[in-house]
Image 1 (cartoon, one colour):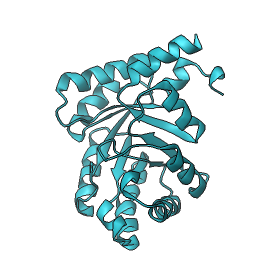
Image 2 (cartoon, rainbow, N blue to C red):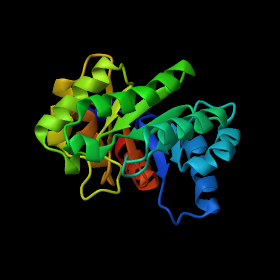
Image 3 (spheres, one colour):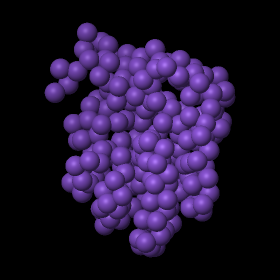
Length: 228
């Protein structure tokens, strides 16, 4: 499978990510430049940088992506909606929203569904796309499956494994589980701990169509050596 890939194919899967709370403005700016140069799928940045990111990416196919309720998902639903509306108004194309992990652990599925729905409805009304972050390292199998079913019912665009700030990241086992329990119109984003080309390819082979990572430069350099 991988021998038919090109470096551009790999880049087109990647949400090039800068989300560390200590990141300087220069890192966000450089991320935009890098993503434009290599034609990444998106730049995933903190909400305050959405406006400038969208301006820098304007006229390209690289999407502006940001995070909502990040990283714990425990903001009030109204706060998540407000964050989302601000992000959309300032140029976000894609929203990566964290589920309310505490409510998932309580198995309060009505709350969880309403929380995801409130954000998804606003994102889709704006003609944009949403990725719902599960943070699988804190969840058991039943909770992951239920979230897949909820996201399928709500017609979310992607389900996402992790924030990258939990105790664990994407695993092949989780990707297989998610793939088996989502509908045909829902895609998977793998994130958290994907630092090498081999890890990216494994996630791709397990069904991920997007990869969130900050080590994009290293991955693309390796891809250029292998696929040249």
